[in-house]
Image 1: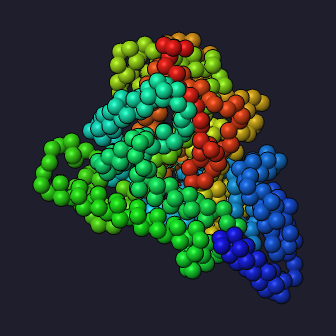
Image 2: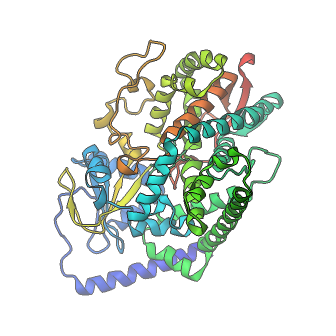
Length: 503
Ligand code: HEM
């Protein structure tokens, strides 16, 4: 049902537009200095785009390597021109210097609007800045940091470690990516909502909120890969295929989160203990937000914080199975800290582990690309002319793979590149790297508000897991990186778990 509808709609829209434009246009060979893939009058690069649709990351990266300015343009029939850049000066200009000219814009917020409503992740202007102010304030408080740390510790010690211990005892094969996703969902729900979905109880069916989030996030992200946006919009109007499934999943998310909000309001009115007021939802309610507004705010946090950390950790655990020496160095750093009891303060000493996480995200960024839409005509620092309404994408996946930025050995997993010299000391100091060269958390005023929380989580998990277990992949093949909204490993990471003492 779905394929024929998509195909027929695309085909009819394509034919219709070609005929109309042909009638009104005489010349189409406008000269441009910006590097483009093969493109044809009227239809732009749609043929190359469609040919490479299943490998857009690699295709963009190849084109960007060929471009003298590390910026390319993809003109697509019926859509605004897309400009993609891996040039750090451009990235700084878009994300910081001329921030207000590069909002997310309606075409982007339309993609996620049904799911995220008016939450921080999906709005611009005043609505964004007022939510950002509140979120930045809360994330800077010691009380939220220590609450998040207690949540994390409890989830690791009472759930993650027991799940891995059982797998080690029975010799089971498990999908580590799935386990980490469930783990991260529990943590982000407890921190954002003060509500525990208990997803690491593998004997129970998948939690309905997690399932609905997964479906909604995947289908919303696939909207962005349609070469002609009118296709998904038409399917939404007709309520067919993937758009029908999306509508159902979003309804489930909204109903379940609204129920949690109602229950939280009631418990706050009754005045339960202080710990019940530590989560973000309680803080937003206390700041006077209510109804759909507060529902959308917390949905944005769950969306932003759920799959990102699990994606980064999955890739790191896989990379370590290929790089024994790096794993040994992490253990050298972690073992003494774990024996003291890995606390909030000890995490600050894990700079080698942090370098490993950065190196992982350089090669496998959880958010592979991110787009803005120009509010007005502009010129990027490399001379690229931007027209009002153009989609302007900065591309962390491609940036991590540019020889010009990382040197000839860009392809190698080398955590040492994050230090000025070979990290021999007990507490090696990371060298400063421009966030515009490494924008995996974005950069500028809209930089990820959960960045420090994410590093805290990832360091704690990596330290706690590696000090106790060895992870042995079942297959030796190179896993496939799938971008979507948050990147993941196709087919998961199938592993056996061994206790360290048994190794
Ligand atoms: C490795 C982990 C993470 C990575 C790589 C990451 C990356 C990003 C990126 C690239 C953005 C910008 C997205 C955009 O504007 O379209 C972003 C925004 C955001 N992130 Fe993260 N994130 C991570 C973890 C987290 C966590 C754990 C939380 C919270 C619990 C979080 C909360 C947010 C929020 C609220 C925003 C929106 C900020 C705004 O628009 O002002 N992130 N993140």
